[in-house]
Image (cartoon, rainbow, N blue to C red; front, side, top):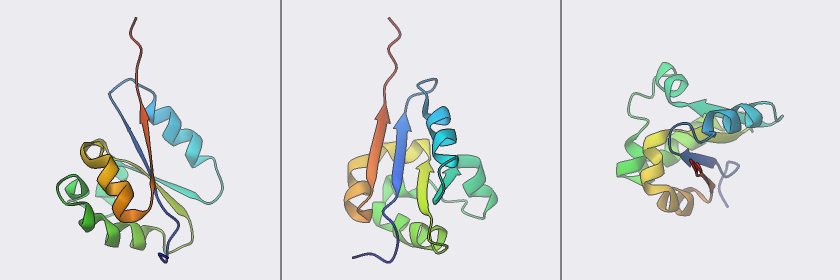
Length: 101
């Protein structure tokens, strides 16, 4: 059992609604949404490394969830390995599609 709440990874193409979903999670008590830019501002220049090596995201999740909040990750590059990230962290993935028809 991990020492953190399993994270949620939001993935989807541009203009599919990932930002509004992140904003909805932000309004939920006990959730901490980490957007691409905010993660870099916190000093995580290699935030997208989860896409290349999912195990590298564990220390990141543990650090961000140290306050007891669930991490909601909205980093587009991590969508490349969504299933692996969920397996490694015990988290859940949300993939949003866009119907352009």
